[in-house]
Length: 361
Image 1 (cartoon, rainbow, N blue to C red):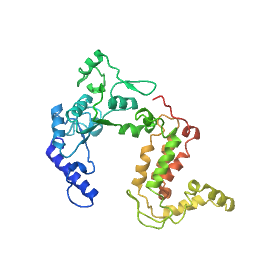
Image 2: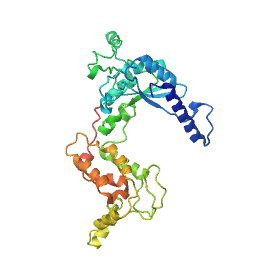
Image 3: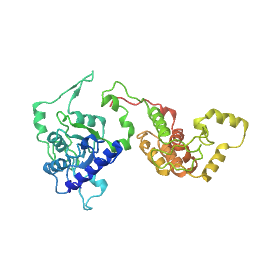
């Protein structure tokens, strides 16, 4: 679509009209296309042999009447089957300066940069510019005349950055004001705890909301329990396969499987009275019942935390538990992804869950 800018603009225009109609509750086109909910465009900065500033600028110029938010992956893409998706994410050289140039060329548009930003420090340098951070949190520029001259020598292929494939990942002196931030999606999947200090270090808050992995997991469990509630305690036959889930009537507080998490006192009382293994019976009954939460909901819910113990010894037990409970053992699926995650957490020693994050980012 980058090679067919007019078609891309038509598609975005129709999306804006549809979003506006949904917001207004009717099919009338909004008087201002930008008054509608914002539709953004994520694209590369070049395609095949169309790999220069003029091509990228012409594409944004064509879309500008219908879109003012652009997420730019700072490398071109190579089509025609020459490179697969993985290679296209790493082989074409990065060109951060081109993104900065586009920001300056279109001051009324908003931009986010993407491409191999792996740490919070890298993100802060790219989003804010080069600086020295004082003890009181103030930022001052740290640029000599020689360094300023070097900035103008950066180009692709870049010999100064010494990055793979001739990439140029030099941060700006001062980031353009319309460079709103950066994307770190791959890093978030691989190592979520990389962001434990993002509120304080990147956004300037006085504290972070979570101090250890248990804090993170507890908040995420609460989010999952609210977003995709348990379906083990209702008689509604509808299936939760997307958000929002069906609005069902909960008939009891817990079932024989999730009672150990959501009402442990009741489990202790029942175990003291009855000697049979109630959980095994409950699992057998659950396997015979209809799954009311789609497997894709479980998989989607557990994926963001698969790397939360990245670099921690003996963390395979957690991932194995997530796989066993979330994919292989259908008996507890109706208890919801929040319950499954809480069960998997039981495989992790408390000393690891409660270990404070290192703030020396």
